Length: 175
Image (cartoon, rainbow, N blue to C red; front, side, top):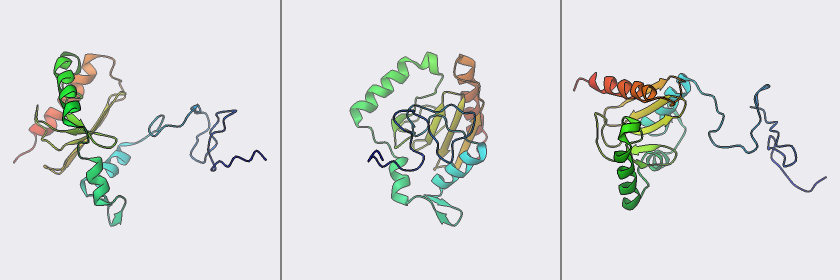
């Protein structure tokens, strides 16, 4: 015995191989596990997750997260100095990003809109992924959008598709 206790499924230092129950055969094993690295998801997963966040932690009749946890996750945590620097960077790079990443703040694990620069209101939260995905929830309008393109963000066209998706979604709202 080595005297080192590892929970089941923990990668060992000498091999780096992960043998947990959720490891799928044929997939490369990461040297170090990360919170989001290499995860697979579906539109149904995103739908359930963002619906739960909009419902203050409830999934149907089940409480998944406490209300305070959801509020912490979906509220800006950056101080004013960092917000100012982030907004300046977004303005300086607008020619590259076409609106992506120009939301202002950061909650726990997601971006949180702190200023209005397009149709989406302050308080919108979510994430743009490097593989051409975008998912945001809007508590004010009680809606969320999911776009999974898997085209990557390697060309300006990818960012434009995402921008057009959100523009179309918000233009369809009839207040």
